[in-house]
Length: 279
Image 1 (tube, helix red, strand yellow):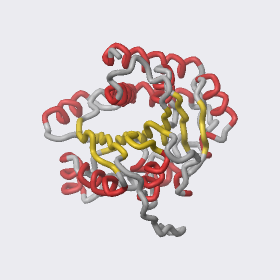
Image 2 (cartoon, rainbow, N blue to C red):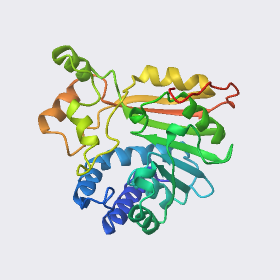
Image 3 (cartoon, rainbow, N blue to C red):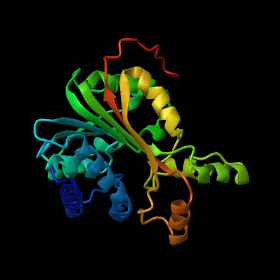
Image 4 (cartoon, helix red, strand yellow):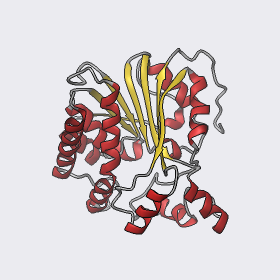
């Protein structure tokens, strides 16, 4: 597969499909907000699809492979992978995915969806059924112990299957400096708490309850039957939401604000977790 060409084509076509019928996620007449978000996030979508294609370098398509995208949101990555002939199921919380307009949007995208909450610690898929599970900008939103979710991801993956995770790098130097200067922990502001509960605000899951460092991500997932294929940090400087000065500073500083870790399932995870409502 010619990754550099295919990646650009897949994401572009997925974006075009989105623009043809952008959903109003919370039904507050704010499709423009969804469009602006997707446009600003296109570089990360392209990076993700590029990373996935590199996992299967000897294939001319992803036909016959099963993918789950957790926290799929607007489904650009799911659509792009389906255009590469993968069987993809986009997953997200019922607050979004149980809405009729969102169901219609995904039908127009020809992508299957599942609506469930990771808080229930169960993925509605058979064991050893998936070739790859993706969680992009998802884990940092979980306000509960994520380890049982990683065990579930292990369960549904085939032996040798991949777990692709990308999220903010909690130990990025700019965040450390900001904490030293302001005394405010990274993740979200108090105003974001109010916005999340505002019925007229187009935000419901944007709070970063916990941002992990790269080493913490590896430390908590590796013991659950996974080995690290690749681990890296980089700056998402292509985001249209960043100013020129901000992008320049990010390029000059070491490390990166984003982490990407690709795990491979090495063994079934046999140990159980004690899970209660307060876990």
